[in-house]
Length: 448
Image (cartoon, rainbow, N blue to C red; front, side, top):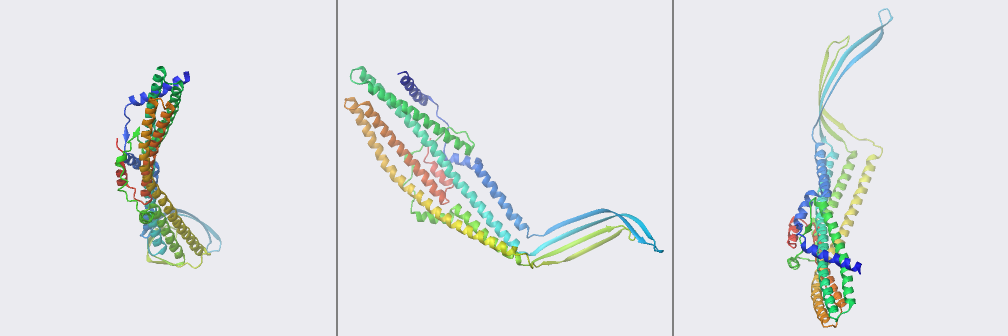
């Protein structure tokens, strides 16, 4: 009995604490998404990677521009020399002198096809990096929405459990009054108390799930968050959303999906790599301008200065590289085949996911309509069970079971609504259409 008393006291304290607690500071979906765009570490890393790939384009184009270099040397020469004199006798001499030289060279590539294809490869890699960044933004929108809805589901579950605890407390009080009047039985009171204990444990579990989901959002946004705006069912524009067919959504994805754009850019880069590898046997031609100046001081020549100016062309014709060029071409062709298969696999996988999310949207819509009627029916059963209990034809357990079924119907309806939002945002993400405007449109469904 003492355990039952303390459990009931805990349940009552949870209800009063929930009623007396100040309203938590909540954020909307668009606010959470905006903070995540600015502070999510994974997105910032992807953005930095894209910025780094942009530099490859500048580096590749720099290979086609003139290159100028300057070289300067200065040496002290210590020379010991032995030579025969006029009498044929060896004579040793020692010479010490300084020598220096400066050289300025300007090289302009005229015909280097490998460098030109290198620019095309860098541009394709840049396009792939931008598509990967776009995919990261799309994925972040889905992750933020899913975490937001997890918080909302746990938040709604906690509130529904609080209401059910309150109703169970009223049923317990009614059973106690009936027992005091000699009309009830002790079992009704014990059943109500046991139900309250279980509901209190479920409420604590829902609260823990809400805190865990809030921590996930705080990790992405780096913002203190205590609650989120609840869903307003009447704001869901299910009739205005053009579901169309999976084929229509696949056509959109073919044109805008960042995943397919990244794979297509990777395939373009592989094709350019094949062209660049095939240029390994082609000649190269550069224009050269070189000015050299040298100064030396020896016994035979004092302060000798010479300046040499050269202007011309340098032609290099590859003759034999041991089969390295052919091997590089084969390797590039294998890589091209691999990326072609990856692109085809990506299309097939995307088609499956689009169909899955499309069915999720349509089925969630139908499920919401069915569960709305189920909630209304469950409420009628609760009213009938309470009236039967008051007339003595039903027990408290019957009333509690009816209230539990009504609570479960409301929870299922909330899950169906949140499932509809999740599948809809995922479908937009797969089609490459989940941008800030779509998030702001979804934000209107959640109001404080």
